[in-house]
Image: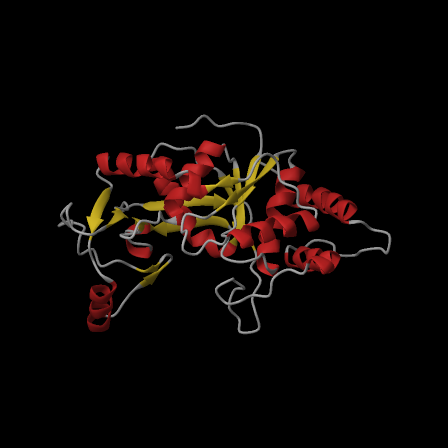
Length: 298
């Protein structure tokens, strides 16, 4: 396992399928404040493993939006699309450990099975029925790689939500780590990069809380460092669903920086009182102090 460090290192890891929106800003602001409140580094990592969804113009827009809102990251931008060799090495290690298997199930097969037997929805979507778990696809067949989760319970401490507890086999199932058409899953890239970058605290949206026990399971299996976690409140749209690029959330307007920051801070439960003379830098400094009192490190 990678040795733990006492130096705080956090990160913000957006997917460049579109610009940041109000929900993205909540995640970015919370992550930024947590790093600054604990005298740590804050890195930017672009989750562009799925090249079909990634847009170069979106990356440039994200950089502009962060800068406009005073959220300055440390060091160079990390691109996951440049790290595929590391993910392949991790896949090979999981296969050697007997925790990976080939799966040639098509969407049509899984859909037909669900229509006939019903379908259990878990934290990662529909739970895989396990067709290929004991009889994996042949190497020459087109296949995805699935991670064989354990039958035990996995409990993770969250600084805001408390204990996150799951029995992965029945609540998550065996997730795909590499699709048949090539892209690496978020789960694997996330834990590999957090370890290599030396990330000590992951601060992200609450929608990912249910996947955290799986991520810890993966990290433990690969003998990687497990960071601490803090999951933030989500921003929902008028339809009650989480704001997302998929749902065509309105991009952040760089001409409304103070308003955007106040809206995000309000979601995070911070004091949003702003004077006429307050600057973005002053506002972030004040919230950093407030954050350190609200979320101290144990």
